[in-house]
Image (cartoon, rainbow, N blue to C red; front, side, top):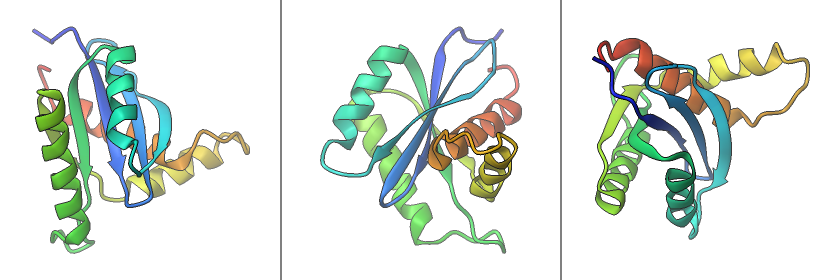
Length: 136
């Protein structure tokens, strides 16, 4: 039986962090916001967790085109570890390979409506997580 909870997904970058949200039952991810990756990042995430009543967090992990892991993967894992420690919540990871390309394609179909590429990429990551996690 599926858990009845809200899930936040993050597209972590050195300058910006995209955030998306979905309900575990409705399974319809939506881009939420793009945050600046700075001193207030975790404080802003805490507000989002509270406002969205999130119970689970997902972080996208980038891979090189050959499938290997790189330095950005390590940064994303460290971000996920920090989230788990700060918010005492489960953090799961999903492959985010080409999520930005998918986000750009999606945004192009919106005829110029701006949603924030990083937030849309987070929604792509969350869609993958929901698709790859049966029985959630």
